[in-house]
Length: 288
Image 1 (cartoon, rainbow, N blue to C red):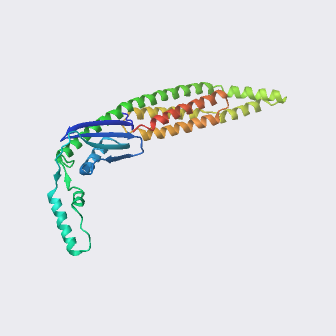
Image 2: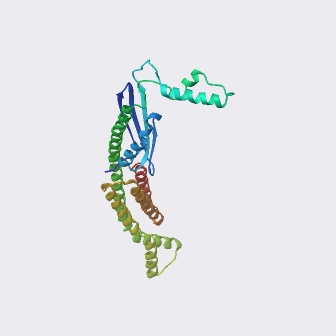
Image 3: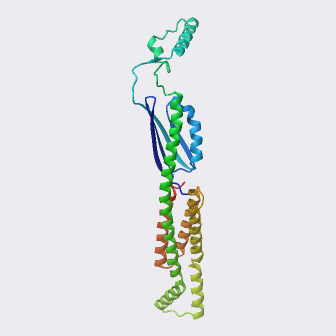
């Protein structure tokens, strides 16, 4: 199964007067990297969510954003009395130990984190459980999106592998004329120079030039790499890194083919090959 590394997913639910929503975005990356943005009161669940992510995905940079938006505002304010009393006790101790230090006023105490709250605080256990369950829902949607996108990427790569096969056949047909064309070109050049050369010597030169221009090995390796890429596409993942390596090998053979070319037609075919291989490389960058 081919998976893309580029996808988006969203899941939301309403609980305890809050709209709880996850947004997951993934892009291509060499490894799996996850970044979570969530209220501090829910940070305790982050390690478990990262474990779920690692079990589901293999590669990609994933941004996970959790939002809590109040949908039913409660005008009542809750006072965290135990925390307030602790603060007062600490201030009394400070006043005894350092009388010269000015004491904070009531508003300073109320501004202390956690002193004021409401009956629907984000640290509620129900909200924590709901956020964890909702994350799994969003993660499944993200994986499904990556799978759909991956199927399209796999099809695009497969079509371009077919194009490489066709170009290899065309170059193979042209390569059969290399010796004959080389001999004709040499004879034409000798006529222009009004130079006579022994027929055996001419044949020897033709053979040497034809050997230097022989691209049979490059064509064979191109076909082998294409076959290996197809096996990779149909096998178990992850696929991206192996396909990226094969793309580099295909490009290397195409470059060698172009450098050995002695005919305009084969030079053009080598350029066409490199264009198709570059298209494959662009697609492979997004495959997990």
